[in-house]
Length: 411
Ligand SMILES: [Zn+2]
Image (tube, rainbow, N blue to C red; front, top):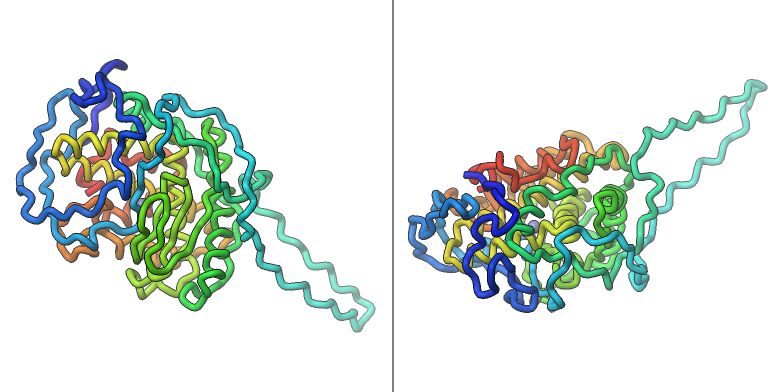
C-alpha cells in the first residue's frame, strides 16, 4: 500500500484524534524523551493487524504482520531521538538558511599530506623531458563550497505544526528536487578501520563528514535549509549522550544534539568488510542521511506520524514509517557514494562490497527471522535503496515516502 496525499490542506487525513487538538502535532516537549523507539519486545504480538486504516488516514500497513521476535538485534544503526525540548512550533516552511557561527572546538580537520613529488632528475641528454601533463579536472561539483567546521551548537531543526505539514514534508519535500552532484572531489585515506586507534578513527570519520558536507551542504542550502555539519564521536562501551545511553554495535544520528556517534565494535556486524576503509564512511553517510532528513524537516515529519500510529496501537504502520525513513538514509548514503566514487576511487566491485554491509544489517538477517518486520527494513530492501542512490539523478529518487513506493518495497 502506499500513502495517499492529502485531499485538502486542512486536516488532510482527518487528523487523528489526539490530545493536542485538531491537526496539531505534539510539541517537542511532549514527545517522549529517550531513545525514541526501542526495539519492539512484545513477543506474541497478534498476527493480524489491529488497525484498519480509515480512508482519511494515510494508507498504512494494515496488511503487514508484525512478528516481533527478539529485543536486542532489532535496532541497528540509528536510533533517532526526539528529545529536543524547546518551543515547538518551528515554521512549517523551511527555515531561512542561516549558517550558525561554527564552534571550532573540534579540531579534526587534518588533511592527509599528499606525498611530495619525486625530485626530478636532470635529463641526461639534451632532450628535455616534457613537463608532466596535469590531467584537467573532471569538473568537480561544489568545488567552490567552503566546508564549515563541525557545528556543536547548531540551529534548531524544523518541526511541523500539523500532521498535514508533517506529511507534506516527508512526501513532497523541496529537497527532493535537488540534483545529486556528480562528481564531487573527496579523498579517502587508505586506513584499516580495525587497526586504527579510537582517536585516529574519530579523526578519519570527522574528515569524512567534510566530504559529506561538500556533497550535501550546497544542495541543502539551495533548497532553503540549514546545513550544519555534525561531529562524529567514536565510542566504546556504553556512553551517555543527549539521546541516552549509546548501545554497542551501533552508529546513530542524535536528533537532540544533531551529532553522530559511532561504536568501535560496530564492524562486528559485518566481519567480512571490517577492514575496508570505505565501510565506516558508508555508515557515516547513512547517519548523515538522517542529518539531511533532520534539517529538511523529513525527520520530525516522519516521527510525528510514527508516534501517532504507535499511540493508536498500530505498530505495523508505525514501523513502516520508520523503515521508510531508514531506507531513505540508505539511499542518501548510496547517492553520496555515487558522488565521490570517481575521486575516491570506489570501483563497482567496491560498491558491491559496500552493498553487502547494508545486507548484513537487514532486520531479517540480524534477527535470523525472514518474516521479521522491524524498524529498519529487510536486507534486500536496504541494499536496493542503497543501490538506487548509487544511480540517483536527484534526491527525489530516494523518496521512500512517495505514493508509488509500496510497503513491500520498504519492508
Ligand atoms: Zn538510520
